[in-house]
Structure formats: C-alpha cells, structure tokens
Amino acid sequence: MPRVVIISGTVDDDALTTACSHFADPRFTVTIIAPKSWAAKSVSPAPATIVLAGPGRDHLTDQQPRALASESWKLWMRYRDDPTAKKAVDQADVIVALDETAIYTGWRLARQLPTRIVSTSAATARGEFDAHAGAA
Image (cartoon, rainbow, N blue to C red):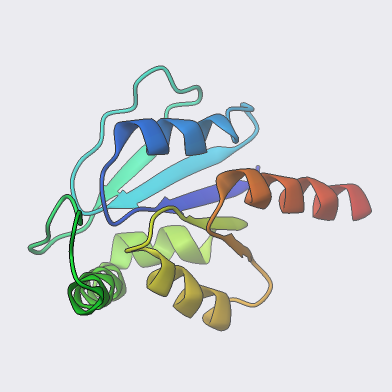
C-alpha cells in the first residue's frame, strides 16, 4: 500500500483537502504532518494526523522573507525532533511539502531520501507516482 505524507506549516483546510483528494484512492495511506491538529472533512480515506509539538504561528500573511525563513527553520526543527513524524516519512513513498513554510523541510527530505518522490504539488506528486508505478 503506497504511503503519502503531506507536510504543512500552516493548517489550511481547503489546501489540505485538495491535496488529500489527489490520493483519495483507498489504496493510499495519507498522513498529514502539521503544527496544529486538522480534522479531515469529506476526505476518503481519512488521513492520520501527526501534530508537531512546539510553538508556531498558524498563518504567515504579510511577513518579511526573514520571518518566513525563520518559520521554515522552526518547522524543520520541529519535524526533526518528532520521532512519530520521522517514522511516517521514513515509510513514505511520496512526500508533499504543501506550503511555502514546508518547502525547506521538503528540500531537506529530498536530499536525505533520494529514492522518494518529493514535491510541492500533490497533483505533480501523484503524476510522478503513477508514472513510476506504471514503469515498474
């Protein structure tokens, strides 16, 4: 069963629901890693949620690039220190860095796990997965 991990620095219900919809096929297991809990709404299958510990802001509107870099670094550090999140990523076939805060974490994971599909777009990640699965 293919495993998908979606990493999000902000918890935007619409963006997460849209990302999950690309993997709504029952053969996928979807896990969301976010700094705040998220309740799956109308998503099939319902994803598991790993809530990262530590302080963090929910939204990054109108912030300077330096503040965004700080939030990106904080998300990486929170992920790195969370054994449950690390285990989910270690078992993942596809990793989606959903928002601008999560891109740094996605970039680091792509470097550490070169055999995994890592993308900033759920649609692109699904296409790559389907292409790899079709080639195998």
